[in-house]
Image 1: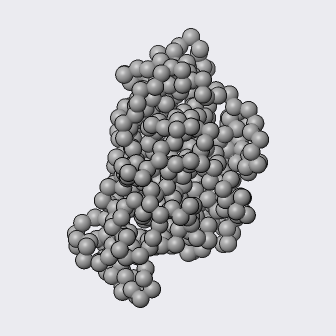
Image 2: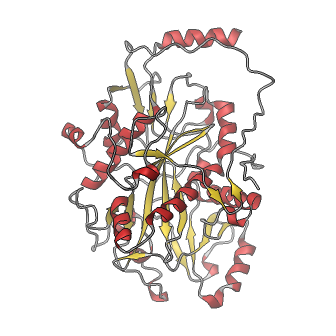
Length: 457
């Protein structure tokens, strides 16, 4: 049986305010930081490059970012089906877009949610000048409203897809993943803990709660559009949930995999350059965020956020927090690199390749769950199929059997660089992303004239 992405029955609303996980203020950095980055990356010696290294030479020369391949799951080969609701027969021939013209400057614009030192530094090193106006080549910042996409010209690029809030809000993401399971069977998406969207699912939650009371099952409460761990708590009584307050409640992963006795999660950075076709790249330099106190599932510890919540914004305020001071010592303190975690697991005899394949599968199926609504929005609002890209922050937790679980997806992952490890990793992430999107220098006046002639044809 083939698994296909099918149209959503839900109405896609104009709701661009997705989740951000900003972790705090950022110290000003000097221009000398450019020496820590590589503009054109060569091949890496890591054993993971064969699985995740860039293989699509037509898209990019970067070796840090690599395409995630579609996987075969238990119910068959995943395929995507494009449903074109708008074309009527063969497309008409139209006047071609003007060729790139290097005489015109490359301009970038940052807005709220995008004004990070590593973002502005990467643009400047790539030869961009900053502009406050609308004549930008690339916009990096807040999600645009649907109406704002219509104001873009064909060669302008923005860092959010219309409708990516379907992943950025915890309630929308849960609905999309649940629909994927209903359409293709429970085995098609096994990575999301059982989740209840309240108040609609309150009766179902009560039934599940009562049925699992004797097993000691815990539940975790989250605001649907929260960040930085604000409002998150482990529930001890279902009466803690106010009847009409929107929230998301999930079965708590009570048996997490621990390193040095502490709970942690993985922040996987994923760049999507298109949903038609779906092009996905996973950055190899992810992060691991650790709790600052050793994990204990006993009832008396359930209100201790430093044991149970892996959010960096929560744990950096702990008196036990140890900050990273050297990017080359990426397995010290309460924030490690993904590379350091994988190396630690390999030393323990873990089949890291198999585990990472499951994480690939988790990422690609999560994106497939929103493929059709986002493609629909692109057709309705974006001037071209290449108008958008997005950097997603997938938060993944491993249980004691090293099965990955999807915790949430951030559509505006924090790019604050308040440690040497953050500075190195996030600057590379932005630099590599700019390699992928391939912004073009062009004569705006000529393009506007071409677009005017197309409209009258």
